[in-house]
Image 1 (cartoon, rainbow, N blue to C red):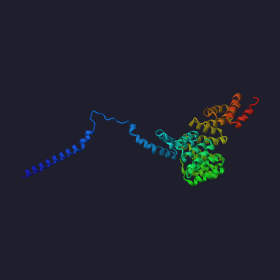
Image 2: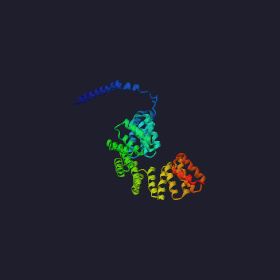
Image 3: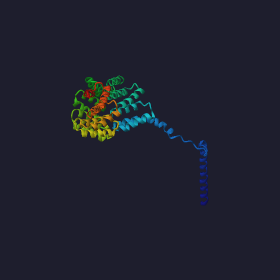
Image 4: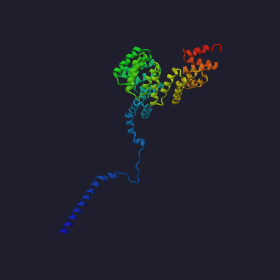
Length: 382
């Protein structure tokens, strides 16, 4: 009896399993079979889209959101080469990215490559002429390119477009200082700091206006404030070092230049800056060491080649000076102080014909150049 009960129970289980399997079959036929019908036959190969096509949306999103932001973050960290690479990536993927052009231009300007920076900021304004930020950066680029009237005009335009944008007043402060309008420069700088006391570059611009007005202690305080706000931006420290060099604090200047060299060994500016400190002290061998290092880091740095030439000239090593002046002129044929040095080196080597030609060329470029005028006068009767 018990045996029959077990068989009956087993039968029930089997029936239940069959029903369950049948249910799955029905579900499969209703849900899965139509999906299977959408799959291509095994003999058909589904084409795979190229990788570039599958990332178009993601790449576009990165252009709009990530590349320029990444560049700005790298800039604030003092990683200028990496920042430039990020801006370049943005422009490569979106040639109309005005902000990338403008911020790339800013880096070139503070690296003392003002003409290249100017071209990029001009492109930004071409793409977006109503931006107060871009006009203030244009003013900065003009100013560092020694086009002071254009700098003032651009900064004033920035103020008109964005009356509460602090960097516009900072830009104006710097441009007015270089234009000799010192009282207005200090006033504009003070206004900029009041609008945004947390912007390091505004403190730098205000400090420059104060320095131009002869208030060196207040200028130093502003430069220090800038460095405290953005300690990884080496160009801020370069500005402080230049102030120390100007007021005769040679040791302090060299210390600051060395700090920049440690942070950015591939930047030619601190090497040339330290070289100028030793040049001022007439310690020409040490000056030449730093100037030559600047040319090694940047073989296109005409100013450093010219300084090496002058360092040799002032040691009366005229034959050694000539090739360095020549290299400076190969890079920048209209570099007047290099023409002057070349002309005087040729004169001291009794190369009078060549000297006369060099001085004449210098005066064609700058009719007021005193070196060339005195050189031609010394050549009279020779």
